Image 1 (cartoon, rainbow, N blue to C red):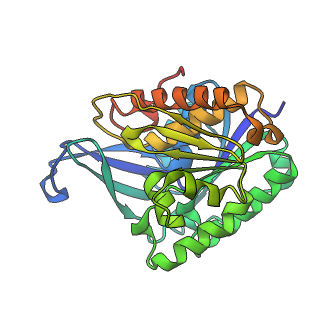
Image 2: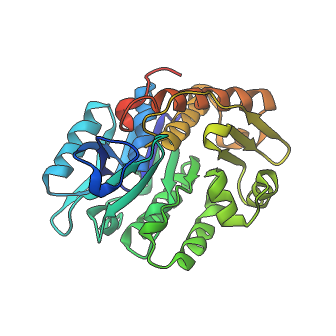
Length: 314
C-alpha cells in the first residue's frame, strides 16, 4: 500500500503574541513558531507515525533555515523543498482574542513559496503517494498555482487521494472576486474537501450546512465541515454525519483545522482506506474518525503554536 502523505503550498513562520485579547500595537513580544497549513497537516500526520513529503520553496534566509531544521526534527520529508535567493520566506503575525481565536497579518509580497513552479517534479516522484493535500492560500496568479496543477496531475496518475482544505485567508487576495473562481477551478480535482462553516457559506451562499455541502458533493466524494466549538460534519453522497465538540479552555487555535485534516487523513491511511472507498464509508466509521479528529484538535488548542502542540496519539 502507498504510504506517504504529500502536501504542497506554503511553509512559514507564525509569530504568536505573548498576550491575548489586545491589539497588535499593544503586544509586548512575539514568539516565532513554524507553520503554514500544508506543513502543519504533515506535522500531524508525521507525529502520529506516518511518512510525509513537503513540496514548497523557502528563502535562503534564517527563517528558511529554522523551518527546515524544525520540520526535519518532526520527521517531515524535505526531498522536494527548494531554496531561492529571489524572495524571502513567508511570515505571518498572529493576533489572539481572549478565546484564543486568531487573525493574521501576512508578509508575503511575494514570498519564496509563491515563486515555486514545480519544475523539478515528475510523475515517478508520487509512486508512494497515499494522498496529496493542498489549500487555497497558494492558488493566486503566481507560479505556485501551476505547481499545484502539476502535482495534482501526477498524484492522480499514481492513484492518490486528493485532499483540499479551503483554508480561506482573505487578506492574501487583493481582489476577493478572484478567490471563488480559483477555488472552483480546483474543487473538481479533489476527492476530499475540508471547509469551515463560514467558508461553506462564503463559497456556496448557503447558511444551512447540509444544503451547502450537497452543492459541493457534485464534484467531490467527501465533504468535511468543521464548526469550531460546535463540532464537525461529514457528508458523502448518501450520508450526513455529525460529531459533537469536545469542550476545552483554548489558548491558541492556530493550526487547529490543520490538526483536524492531518489526523483524519492518518485515520484513513492506518485503516487502509483507498481512494475508491472514500465515498462509501459507513456512518459509524465517519463518526468515529470525526470524533477522534475533534479530540485531536481539542488537545492541540490547549498549547501555543501548531505542530509543536500536536499530540503523538489519536
